Image 1 (cartoon, rainbow, N blue to C red):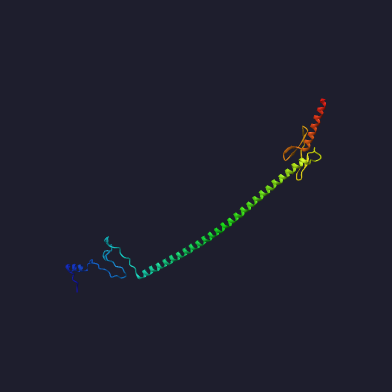
Image 2 (cartoon, one colour):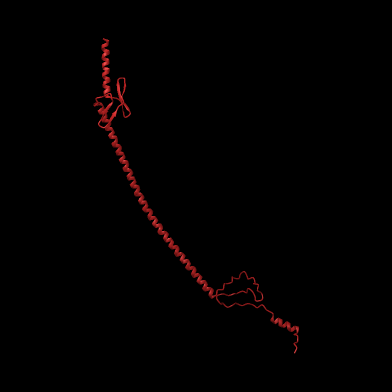
Length: 218
C-alpha cells in the first residue's frame, strides 16, 4: 500500500496546529514565599523582556537548605561577634585594672618622693644651721683670741724685745723686725704694728737725745 501525499491545505492545518504559541502567564502558587508576578522570558524566546520600571524587584527564592545554611551562618557570625565583644570587654577591664594599679603606684611614688624631699630639706636645713653655729663659734673664738693677744701685747712683752717674739694664750707669732727711725715693727696677720717694747725704747731714746741737746746749748 502506497502512502498518498498529504494535500497542501492539510499540511498547513497541521503546521498551524503544532506551531508554538505564546500563552498568557498566570501567577505561580507560593511555593516558599516567592512568586513571579511578571514574565521574564518565554520557552521559545530565551531573551528576557524588559520589565516595567514600576515593577518591584523580584524576590530571592530561598529553599529550605539555603535558609538553614543562612541561619547557621547567622548564628556563627553572632557567636563570633559575641566572642569578640567578650574578648574586647576582658581587654578593657584588664587595661582599667592596669591603669588603676599605675595610678596607685604613682600616688605611692609621689608620697615617697615628698617624704624624701622633706627629709632632704631637713638635712640641708640642719647642715646650714650647724654651719652657721660653727661659723659663729669660730668668729667668737677669733674675737677672744684677738682680745687676748691685744691684752698680752700691751701688758706682757717677752724679755727679748728685739727678736719680735710675743706670746698669747692661744697665738704665738714671730715678728719680722724692721728698724727705722728707732722704732721696731712686727707683722701680725698681715698688719704691721709697732711693738710696745719698741715704743718704750724709742721714747727713752728720744728723751736722752733731747737731754743731750739741752745741755749742749749751755
